[in-house]
Amino acid sequence: MKTIAILYERELDYGGVETHLLALLRKLPTDGFSFVIISPVSKRFREAAQSLGARVHPFAHWSAFNPFALFELTSVLKREAVDIVHAQSPIAAAPGRLAAWMLGLPAVVTVHLPVTRYHGTRQTLRARSGRWIYVNLDRLLNHAMTDRLVYVAQRVRDESVASGLSPAERSIVIPNGINLEEFQQGVDRDSLRRSFNLPQGARVITFIGRLDEQKGLDLLLEATAGVEGVEVWLVGDGPVRAELQRLATKLGIDDRVKFWGYQVQIERYLYASDIFVLPSRYEGMPIVLLEALAAGIPCVVSRVGDNDLVVEDGKHGLVVPPNDATALAKALNLLLLSPEMYRQMSEAAVRRSEDFGDDRMARRYSEVYRALLSKRR
Image 1 (cartoon, helix red, strand yellow):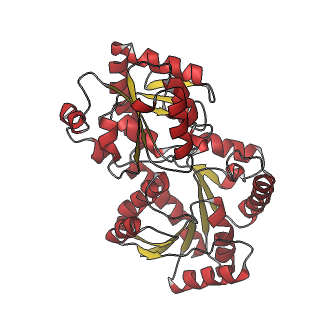
Image 2: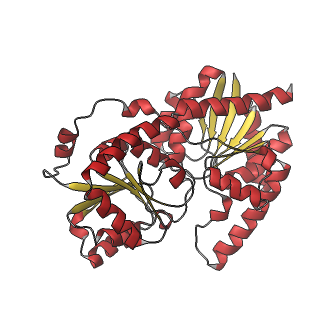
């Protein structure tokens, strides 16, 4: 068995990155790989990872500028007899690649969101200076100490190569994948909706993810104010929750906006919904969008990242410009008032999700690992 070290600097609990990692842990041991997770982790993620055979080291000292942290990380990699270092973000990848270089190990970085989005869109002095430091450090390490850069989004890869941030010959795309078997079981949608106390004929618009400025949820609430007779479900939590609650009250729609907080079985919320909405200001390739398609939910998405490469406008859902609440409201009304269009999109969404199984994703990662290991012989 060859050991892959997975590096991440934020606490792993649940979400897109976590779904991605658990798919690798579930699929790749049969190809001769074992995993050690080097990251802060929640009790829930630790138990899930360990149940799949991974070892967990709750490392929290992610600084490329602290020699003691770099020494500690190097010691962990040696102790775990790691064969490949695989970082899951530019921040973890900075000390991770330095440690890999010191030990003569191959380094892989999966880019879920580019380092140019460090601190999001904030323009404070701290955000701009931090972004400049990490972008330039990332550029240096991409060219000098990275064996393979794996982008989950085609557009992010192309933009990174065009700007000189990443070397073209070592930058590839492996789209995210999901466990399609979780969405291939029969679901009694009426009973499920009754379990949520939804009245007959209720229409539900749902967002699932982190409540963050990135996701454009202020736009969703503004758009919903112009869409009559719908409930809005926000499944997740994050730093702008209180701000969104105040906005819902200001818009007079707080009685039809539900904040569900973090949920584990998100498929229940998808199957109980009518439309999935992702009005993000920027994205890579969101896993929850693939899950919504697999649940047969037409999607309304903003034209950022690979959203409109996953959801073809007019076929699997509707695509709107980013930062445009008016266009978002029109798209939602169109779907809600066009039952035949809705039915066709629902069927097409399920078919589209079949292109994104996690078997295919894991097979591509296995090929990357094997190619790098063969060079070390």
